[in-house]
Image (cartoon, rainbow, N blue to C red; front, side, top):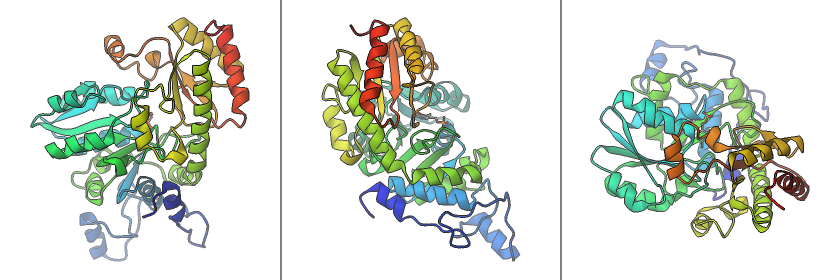
Length: 400
Ligand SMILES: *Cc1c(COP(=O)(O)O)cnc(C)c1O
């Protein structure tokens, strides 16, 4: 297997039925069989190149899944209708009533909410921890714990999970390490560093065009098959199925992911350094001032940089709000949630993407109301963009 995920994806060739350079889109919910035996066989096992019903799998979803497996370097993968569909199916596949999860508390708001408010309905309890505190994590694992869950680069404070150390802890206890690598595809080889299972919201960097939601679970063949099982597979039975037309467009966009990640990272590094020099409090893993800069440097594939997410402290909510509106007027980007777009996107996490997390807990995590999260775009003149942002910062009183 090649070291570089971009090469692995490029080496993954699928032709259409006439030798088309992109695979043909399967326009079908169901598939015909030539014998009763073959259909019976497909209900009990997977047969390469055979499809039964599109909630189980379809040719295009299979192709996109294989591209995701190539991205992460896993044996297999399965794509789903959203990142939340992938995360919830994955965790429900592993956990039964009475089981527990140990999760980072600085995670995507929707993931936090499903663990905190929804899973308890099924008797699944989550203990939230500071993911940078390995002793706290060990102390929260007990006989019922089945999973350690974290994001490689957390939302919105961009803390780094030490995947190598977390894997050691998971192995000592015989449990699974599940990692959401949505913020750092290609940048951090999460599976190689120790994740048993890697989940993605494809909605963000991987697709990169903000035209749909989608998700994926990457792991070994056994786990992915279990997710798809007609008898007890969460993906098959809960039904978060991605449409074939969408998976075709996501696959085409994945072909340029490596170029986009380099540009997102380069732009983020430039802006983060300039803002820090100007005296703004900046959270960016690529800056030596980031508390875990050494750790993340040991984890990344250097040619893809430190990814495109930056968080700044704009002092208070009023200043943050003013700044975002000014930046939108200056055509720096859009005031919108989500990330990984060609245009820079910014939002204030406390009132949007992390609003599911109660205020007291936000404070305990160090999330203040003046935070502004940037997903750096693919700007071709980052110096011009930086100058526009600085001008907005002066106008709202954040810089002199
Ligand atoms: C957006 C996001 C999700 C949820 O993905 P959807 O595609 O919106 O369902 C999960 N994790 C992270 C880190 C995200 O940014």
